[in-house]
Length: 426
Image 1: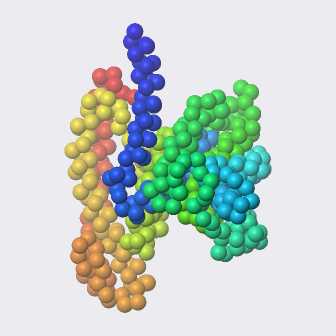
Image 2: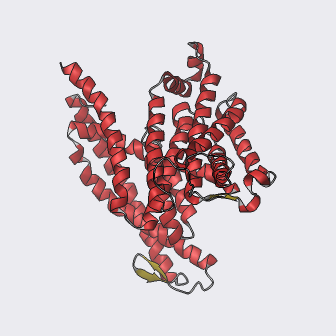
Image 3: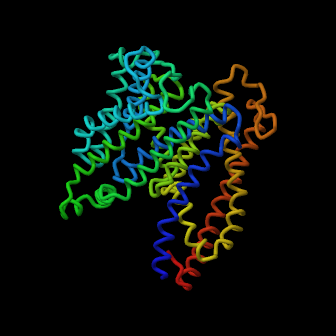
């Protein structure tokens, strides 16, 4: 009886999570009602699909790609050409299914480039994808009929041919179209991880020699995984094209490829929901920080370095590490030490932000002596005292973080001993 209950709970838990995921997407526009919020949440949906498709390579099969934006961008270009064809009366196809055109475009080029790149693994594979990404980006200025040259390709998403009675002119209608595709695409990618292909990809990632020894063709497994990830990246590109109604050469470029790598790694490649968290966080930071500071790319870089050095499992790794203490009922012993460590951490971040912003003010501002607003205070970057205070705050915060780190480690060791004694260790 207990086994059947456990099996039922194991089956129902993922179903409940997916229903909750869909409900969150459906309800969010009623909480965040401004047009800028709707636009940002639409971008989050697009990049959730894009990051999950990248995780099919890096997280599921251990393939580090520097050119994944190729399939995202090409999917967007194919979608926009298809939309222009409907607008010109060349053919008829409903807008709701247009992302499939992008997906098929991504799949087609995933098969072509995957047949070359997946013959090698490791660093060689990464270098090949870097070369393919550079080649496709530079080709945008050669094949202007397809890529549109420097100005790119634009189109009008308001079509006469739709499955539902919506024009998709208002951004809220586009949000729900993207939201529906986000749930469907994410669910399909999740189900793929439960198939034999997903298991073989994990085996190829963990120990390719052993997988080959027991009879699996590692090249074929990498090729299929690569091609399918291109399909889902193309769907994300198609939704991006529908949302912005324009595609340009940088959409297939290395900067876009670097951005999806940041999203996936910061979110965490070890858990399926990691790239979802990464896409939401990075999209929010990109939107919020780019309007706040010239140094938003520097902040992204610092965050990436911090995660690589101190949290290689990403945000998802941090969350999953706390499942065992939570189940064992000893989480309350960690929370006070976390609160204590948060104070110097915030001080260090505040000091670092002050140093960076004053540095940008000195180097880029027309009048560096003009005060800037930092933490509800006016700060003059040309004033030596402001620099001294910022450096002092950063140094004090950093020293506090180093001290708090020892306390956190000591408390974790104590919690692990308690869980081992009670038989609750993971």
